Image 1 (cartoon, one colour):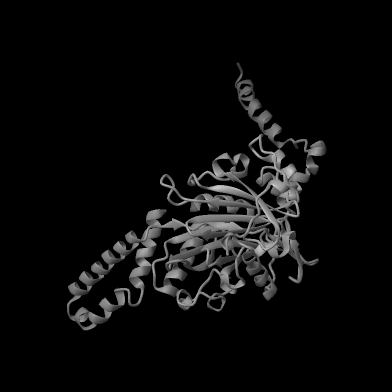
Image 2 (cartoon, rainbow over the protein chains, first blue to last red):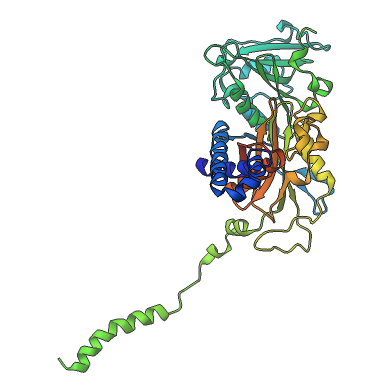
Length: 236
Length: 193
């Protein structure tokens, strides 16, 4: 299949105006009529050039993220989500966590059995104008919170749980590089792909970069203006 | 042994075999003839119009499937329910909205079929919603083929009878439109798996 695609690429590339094929044809217009061997030679050269161009650009598969399918009426006027994703689907992806849980409730779901979270003990997340508190867990210790991730990530990677009014409203996965994993992009993509099929009424997921970090935020749709606030606003 | 008897012995098994084959079989299957699973499996699936949309900032591609409830007089053709002859613009808008739900800004999202000037001006006006979709009554596969313009991919979309045919069509469209090799590809079913 790879070879077949490269062959097709070669054929199409060779046929492109301005990609060598036309120039050769144009320059050789008179010469081709008088010297058929020159035309054949030029065509061969173009073909080789096409193969070289194809070889420089190996085929790669583009990842595709699946949005939740919509069910329209027969006139295409109104829609609903075709598959009703329940908050239970979200909980399965988030190791049992649900939006709205108190820090004490969240403690029950964290992999570290010694964790005992209380609102008053949590540090303030200064990037928010509201009184948002947080707790963070090293990615290595995140257990089922990173069960979708098989690709590598650096040791400084971590998961942040954010609370507003004593209720969980966001889980933020921050994948950072290190010497053993210089590019954690694939890890972030794996995680993100699991959340994109959820309806935006269940969870709002975004993927973005902050410096060398790949961030996946999954936020409660009821969080209002907090939904649009990203990690890069930290400290500003 | 008399010749007629010998002949009868030889022919009798053949006659018996023919008779058994000619006997009507008992097709009384009890309750097995009312399998709901079988009914569901043979029921034609709703028309699906599938779009590919792109976030040019994150360089991520999304598939947005739009299923249409069949009208009261819809007739299947070759086991497929027909799709709307004219897809309302709001359907394409809903596909874009699916991408925008995950984007920083609305302008980050475009249709995945892009015109020649897209790499200079990566904006929605340089992409086509009509060309970025496939309908299930026309083709079972949708494909994308792209070249990388640095921070984002520049792509085109095509439909096909199978993944390879769809990718080839997308690739030809991309290479003809942009005069570049388009080695970044993908294909997926128009209808949800």
